[in-house]
Length: 241
Image 1 (spheres, helix red, strand yellow):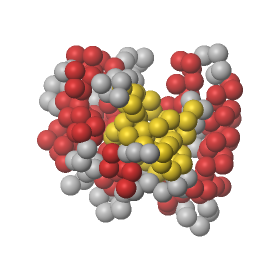
Image 2 (cartoon, rainbow, N blue to C red; image 1 turned 45 degrees about the vertical axis):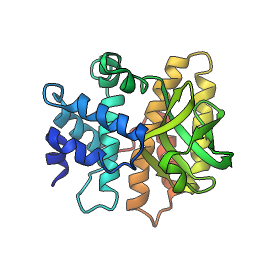
Image 3 (cartoon, rainbow, N blue to C red; image 1 turned 90 degrees about the vertical axis):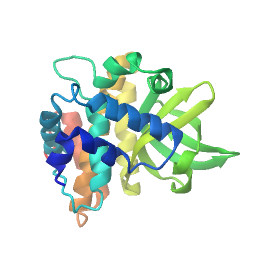
Image 4 (cartoon, rainbow, N blue to C red; image 1 turned 180 degrees about the horizontal axis):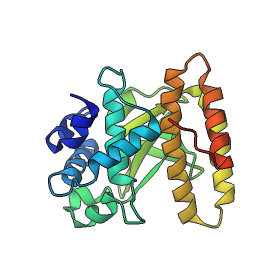
């Protein structure tokens, strides 16, 4: 199946998100993604797909990370994409869903590093919030390596933090330039949390683009690619796909 066919056929959305590790929180997430993109709510999906993959680089079914990239696209389409200043699909639909899905409303979307375990919990550093948190391990706990650097969503509930949705792991050598960029965003938006969130989302999308470029141009080196892309971001240039 082509990326276009998958993105345009609501029946295939479950197949795409179904590649996430089985877990109650991923199950909630998958159910909401399917709900948000089902018939009657799927308008604009084709245009969004073209927009997203033009920005982050084309996706092909024989790519080793094709499933992850399609999951990341759907995640962006539902939770991040705004048109003409309108709320995202998640902002519009989550308040109307059943309580079991509504718990996804309160979550953080950020860049994290994994610093091992403390008792039953994973120790993470949230770089956008500049905060250390402990997270219930779920299935991800089996796969993370010490000091791994990744983008993810973390639900915040009365019984603690829970990872859910696709996890986008970045090259270890990208950590230094990304940390510097995130610190700059925190400094420039210190008194404006809304602007910090907006700039943070821009950085997260850019990093998805740079991850693809680093894979395509491995001979250049991930650190150089991330550094150049972030410099263009702060200078107001677009990096191009």
